[in-house]
Image 1 (tube, rainbow, N blue to C red):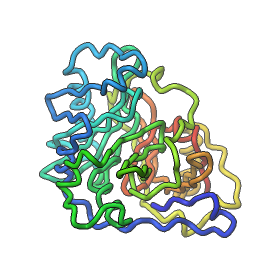
Image 2 (image 1 turned 45 degrees about the vertical axis):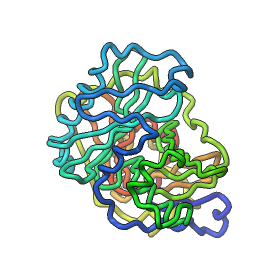
Image 3 (image 1 turned 135 degrees about the vertical axis):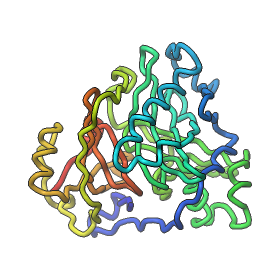
Image 4 (image 1 turned 45 degrees about the horizontal axis):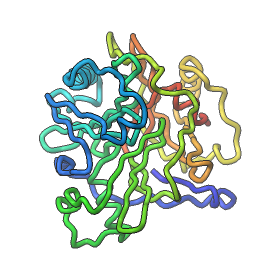
Length: 321
């Protein structure tokens, strides 16, 4: 998916999307020694820097996160498009200082099949902030490697396995709020920021600040109980039509309003302005997934289906016909 920087708005020129080869197994992510890795049956902890940033919630036991992720994985595996999650294993990696969050990357038979973004709540439980399917998970180390090679930020002589294990290349995952997710990479004396989904280089000079003002820690835990109601439409290119450049957004502020809009027009586009307006991100809306218990999720097409909490997405962007 293309990211459009603000300075191109007047002439409608978009940043070209990076062209990646199909992502292979991300098993190499396990050798990312700069991260805290959690495999099924093991637990991960925040770094000392993270722990010092704010009080750590009582997580009750080290097995709680593992049990919660496995419960979510099993529930989602019954949904269409998540079939590969049934027997998938997973690893987790921390998301930036003070966030008490993790990205969970799922693999099945050596292939990436999806991801989850998990945050601890104030009462020691966990919230499923975001999740997605496909071979291009959020914070894929494989996507990062290919992007750095393509932009000639690392030489092609460095293999993927050597890159993953190279501790002189600082690789930090930053997830400040919905859709604000970046890789922070330090190469020698230079710092680069790349989109955590597409791998595109971002025009940032410092860590992004959260766009949402409400703290995520106060939100309730996630319970994927009962049956999910899912509406899913085919993907389309939001650049085929661009009403989001000159048109007015639809008055969509809730799930019923989104449902009404999708009944009228299946090709809706979600648009958010990121990084103080430096980047415009238009994404095709595929539909929504609403659980019997818990918050509904907006399904966006961003290098594969991306399920973002609807309230957070609507708080950060707008819907266009």
